[in-house]
Length: 309
Length: 251
Image (tube, rainbow over the protein chains, first blue to last red):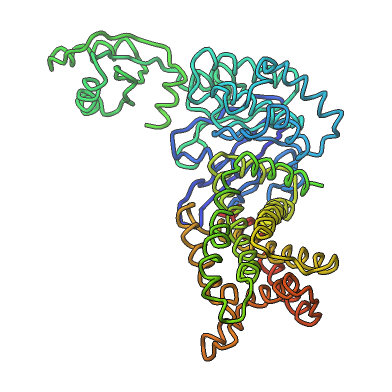
């Protein structure tokens, strides 16, 4: 069953900016769905529409089987969202924050207290209870923010860049927490992220957006297999050097899809051995100082770069 | 129910940001303590025995303005810390969101008017109103503050930042304050200035408060007129605040 169905959604702001231009996507119940896209791709606008904050200009959008334009009020009680910026009230204690959230969603007090204790334990927040919320680190604030959203036991949880600015250890802890939310609470998670490894590691389904439209949607495996071809990766000393020689390679191999990935120039190839020979010959003839060349399996990052090239 | 949940949270915000109480009451207190002492001596020849007492109703309006304006600041702070968005996607009615914030500003007004009233007692101000009169004073201040809070709320959702908001609010309050009976009796003011002062609804609110506080008299018709004006203006400004909040979601 699809908990979210977006068909041909268009959003044009009153100032004329077109944020979504015919976006379509589907989210299945009980999965972690990741939305990938560059800045300005329309991810935040889409999340704001799906959380009933903004109205689409046109298109059909249903969330939990209800029309987003006609039944926003009914949808609100079954969803929750942790925005990119933590929204906890720093003048309330940890427990007051959680109870306030439960009151907003009209959860009976006894049930709310029980749920709060469970979430405090599940999210490892016990040791922070006695300290003022304003003194928490960014990672703990983020954890509390997500714990808050779980107070209403939402069927659908939206997370806008949940691990942005976190160190690796905190990110891994957050990933485990999100999997726990999906597996133990049965909550469908819709998240946006910039981190490809995060989407790869966490998601059941990934959707890549570009210029307000969905470009491709599928499982991480499916997306990787979308590029069945191998890639040739030509390593340079620096990304500047890679950028310098990118145009020469593009000019000489105009039929090939070529883009930059860190300090390497990546080329999609059908016949990797033949292409490799041609590329090496070209590089040597032109005296291009490359570091090395290899045939590699495409990563999710390659798919992303390929889609956004 | 949701109104009280939000009201409780807003009250906690106010006490956490206690400087907003100090900043908003500071100017009216300075008027009460410094201005009334200095101007009081000059005003004696006009027949006003206790100028501080004369000034008090005007300062009640001024402190209401200041306290309610700071309610608008809450919107800017909430927008920047993300909680504005969290409340708007919660399953609560939009009118509860507005009411929760307006009632907090009204309560803050009562707190500041109370402080101002207590301070005025030190300047030999005697409240002549009996219990019924005090009831009418409270009701009048409620309607006054409710209107001002809704006005501030709406304006804060139109203007882009706190600095412009503060400037605009000051530009509104000063002409209203000076073109009323807050500082002087205006019996001898005629012509266009006299008409403006008479047209200013705050003139009538200040006069009604003055009659109640200083003379303990309940001028029924005057009071009904002031209540009618402020109920009407409060209703319109509440509708405007609600409209502005809904527009936040239809960008």
